[in-house]
Length: 451
Image 1 (cartoon, rainbow, N blue to C red):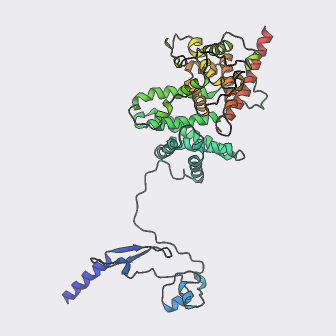
Image 2 (image 1 turned 45 degrees about the vertical axis):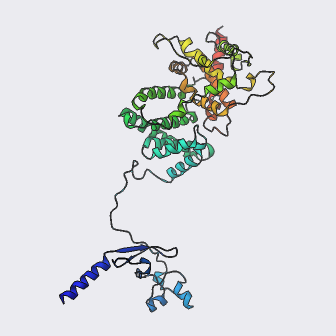
C-alpha cells in the first residue's frame, strides 16, 4: 500500500510541476499542464481548457467547450441554432491577471506627466520636426534616445514639437500654451542640472538641449511689440536671442573643459564652420568689404538711406582671405576697443550674408550665383552665437548703430531663407524687421529735429 502511495505521489508531482503555454491564431493563450517526462512532445499532449461560462445552451447540454462566438463553431458544424442564456449575452472574456508582482521600471517622469499630447508631440518631432532642423535626422534620432534619460531634454523636444505644430496649426491656441509650458520646465530642469555636477551630463545632451532652446527662442517674438501695436515705434526693441546665445556660449565654454574627453555625436556638426563654403562661393573682394565697413561706419549718422544702402559686388582679384574673417581680440576685455573689437567684426560677418541679396549682385553678372542654402541657414542660426558679448550689450542698451546692423540681418534672413523650409525663422525675421525699422526711423526723425 505504501508503495502504491509512493508511486501515486511521484506521478502526481511529475504531472503538476510543468506547464506549457500555447497560442494559435484563432484561439486565446491557454496555460495547460503537461507531464514532466523526458522526450515528451508538447504538440501531442491534450490541452486543458478554462471552463466556459459564456457558452451557448447546446454546448452546455452536451458538456463540451464552446468558443463563445455567435454562432459558435460547434453549432455551425452540427447545423444547430446557437442560442445563449440572456445573462451571458453581454459578458466579455477578461484574461486572467497574474498575481506575481513585477517590479516597475524606474521612470524620470512622475505618474500622470505622460499623456496623449506628449505622445502626439513625440511622434510629430520624430516624423516631421527633425526633417526641418539643422544637422542630419540621425543626430536628432539619437537625441530622442537620450531624452528618455534626461527630463530637461525631453521637455525641450516637446517644446519644439509643440511650437512646430502651432506654426502648422495656428487655429489651435493650446499648442502655443503647451510649448510655453514645456519651455519653462526645460529651462528650470536644465538650470538645476548645470548648477550641480556637470561631469555627469553627456556633452551631447547639453548640445542638443541648447540647440532646441535656441530654435524656441527664434520662434518666440514676445520681446518685440506687435507690428499692429501703435506703441511699437516708441518702445526700444530688446532682442533676447542675442542675450540668450551669449550666455549659452559662455556656459558652454566654461563646461567643455570638464566634458571634453567624452565621445560626442553632435560635436563634429557644431565644429563645422559654414563660413568656409560661403566665403568661397561669395568671392568677396577687399573693396567690397571696405564698402560695407564705410556704409555701416559707427561714426556715420543714421539716415533714411541707411535702411536701403546700395552696395553692389565689386569685382577684383584681391579676394578677402579666410584669415580676415576670423576675428581675434589682441586686447583684454577690460581695455578692448568697443568699435574695433566689437562693432566692426559684426559688419564683416554681416557682409557675408548681405552679399547674397539680389540687389548686391554684380549688374553685369551673366550667370546668377547659386546660393549655398544649407550653409547660409547654418550661418544665420549661428550668427547670434558668434557675435561677441559686448555687441549684445550694445543691443540691450539700444545703441542705434548696433540695432541698424540687426535690422539688416533680419531683413536678409526674410529675403534669403525660404519660409516653407525654415518655419522657425520667418516670424521673428518679419516682426523684428518692422519693429527695428519703426524705432530707428524715430531716432532719425529726432536727429533731424535736433539739428
